[in-house]
Amino acid sequence: MAEPTEQQIVAALGAITDPDAGRDIVSLGMIQGLAVKDGVVSFAIEVDPQRGAAMEPVRQAAEAAVAALPGIRSARAVLTAHNPAPDQSKPPPRSAPNSPAPGARGPAKLDVPGVRAIVAVASGKGGVGKSTVAVNLALGLAARGLAVGVMDSDIYGPSIPRMVGIDRKPSSPDGKTILPLENHGLRVMSMGFLVPEETPMIWRGPMVVSAIEQMLRDVQWGELDILIVDMPPGTGDAQLSLSQRVPLTGAVIVSTPQDIALIDARKGLNMFIKVEVPVLGIVENMSYFACPHCGERSEIFGHGGAREEADRLGVPFLGEIPLHMTIRTTSDSGNPVTVSEPDSPQAEAFHALAARVWAAVEQQMGEAKAAAPSIVFD
Ligand code: ADP
Image (cartoon, rainbow, N blue to C red; front, side):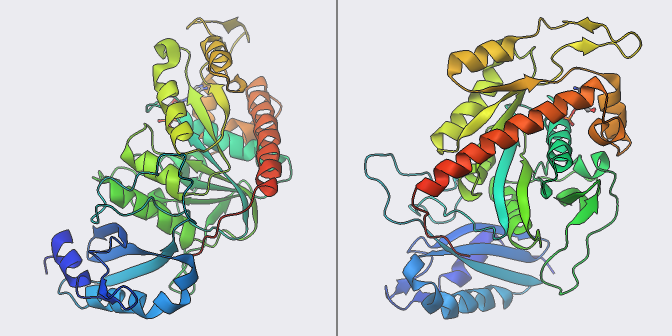
């Protein structure tokens, strides 16, 4: 049976009334992040933090209204609380551009209990080694004795499963939540576990956000010191709303020296500044060529651009990762260099990166503790 269109789903939700406002939840702009895929619908209902419990019947009614449509296999609604009154001196956060409810307020941050810090690894464009850096950074952090998770939100090209050597499917013992898969001491979740790597998928912005929200909400991460989020490449609307929805401790930007003047990296930086996510720093990947035979270092791309650019922009420089054959071959075989050749100079570069990133995270967490927390629930 054909699945209903977004309009039909929104129409069904239009029959649900918010008892306090006396109006329907669609015209009140409360529906966010509506996603429809193979008859599975998910969306969020944004409510005042104080009204959380009272809104549960509305949530259930909304879920039931969508589930009753022909062609729907399951419907899932979550309540999200928007942040307390915004600071009027700052421009209001943007709502998701494809959100079905124009005028809805900026998305609230998701609550990820048990996870102390969440760090995004981002790049202005694809192919700069973002996923490679994310995985090896995670392994470097794990080598420091930290409990580390990796969330592959690069759903356009989920390469993390291959890089960490996991090709099983995750299980869901309770039918509601998913257990992350583990290898090399990392807890890992990726859409790639659910969808084969070669399957082409067309993701629209809200679907990306919804898929990622599910990975944060429905995966039993357990207690983690740090969750590394491999972001989709680029700085489009999906990346922007992700940066707004995920309670990021900070972001690490991966760049290569040949991005002339690092224009793409600067775009990434600006995006995080716009959504007030601290930029922990820039990493220069494929910084110089390390010859696998003689170990000689060649500055093929005239390295050092990222360090200068970071200085100019007033952002920390987190280090240089060489362009080295084994970084690629070990990732391709599921045994990243940081674990398979832990004493090599390549692994050293990632260990040093991990140390700098963790120091920056600890500093951010210290500063965050001093500031009042915002009320967020799911
Ligand atoms: P992105 O996530 O930015 O698209 P990937 O991490 O998938 O990029 O890397 C793209 C390709 O480049 C992969 O084949 C990867 O193994 C290789 N690669 C990344 N960084 C390095 C490096 N420092 N040295 C050698 N190969 C690398």
